[in-house]
Image (cartoon, rainbow, N blue to C red; front, side, top):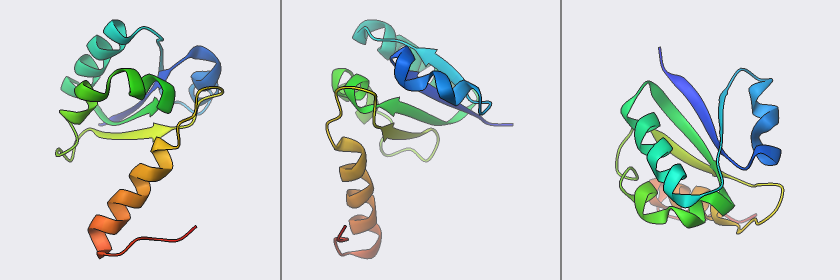
Length: 103
């Protein structure tokens, strides 16, 4: 059975634990890259990463972009939002339907 993980600063992700998701509080980029690699190689089909943390490990995330599993999804954090999560959704929709979506 596949699992769902959430990575980011503790204040932004602790609530996901109450929903039954596995949380991985991390701030430092080296540790985050190591955890992402371990999660992607394991049973995790979906990995949510806060936008601020994803900014620090862009190259590591890029390695998994073309794979179906794990799906890496950017989510807003309490602080340091970049809009990358929404832009990622827009890019996926545009690729799927051939047209941009309007918010």
